Image (tube, rainbow over all chains, first blue to last red; front, top):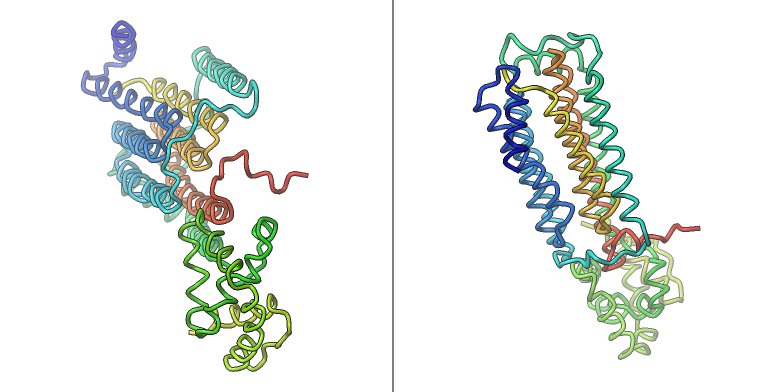
Length: 289
Length: 101
């Protein structure tokens, strides 16, 4: 190990590099690789996210070493500060921060095949870089890299040469925000095919039809959101209420629902079926303030 | 004079390989997303290195855009993960065969 490091240092210092640069690169590379391996082998997703933070900080140090100081700051702020926090938030929100059985292998022979293919590709790429030149392109396409502070160069290039992609980036972010809101929003009362397969009585005799709807329209808008936080306990209240009072749900719900629906919105159709009439006021009450 | 750019590119290759291996091997969807982030970071590192090798700021501008696209991708991807977890409690990648023919 020490011999390899010494050989690497002597090989790297051929270009009159200072020992500080070589040492910083070696430490950062070790941190980056250790963090990356930690992400792959960590059983707990929270540990994987923290290992990812370690890798991102190492990458930021390597950016600083290559005179990309603005990108290093953005790397720390956006990646470590926003994206990993988003990962951790989703992990905690979904409650999946438990260890995974990493030894289970559903596809037989998939892991050795993956490791072999990756090793083959990596070796080929490294050998190709060793025997040929990494870059053959023409320099100075978007402006020189030196001569002014990094932020000046980057800002001038972004706002002149790459102005249209920069504007398109704004549109992309808006679309991503709208898409995230649409995806994360719970649909008002759409029919869920999976829930219907597993528990057909959950919708007819569910919490909408028994007591909440009679109590008033205000509680119906609150009730569907409460099982969303804990998906594992979702079927239990529905089945419990369906078992205990299915008759009262069938008997009480249609009158209460139609009265409620006509009171709230006059255009809602009053059907006799309990399941259909439950969906109508839910969707209308969603639009009310 | 800083150290040889070849080392940065070799590190980038290895980092990309580790990320790709994680996407292929792991079954947790969130960890697979993190491995995609590893691959994006490897690409970013090589972009910055090429910007230094070619004395061109374009590589750093490209890293800027990759960061933005990665942020958008994570937002939408995690939204999809949340939408999946709402329907089923245990969502490894093997369980998501609803659209299998």
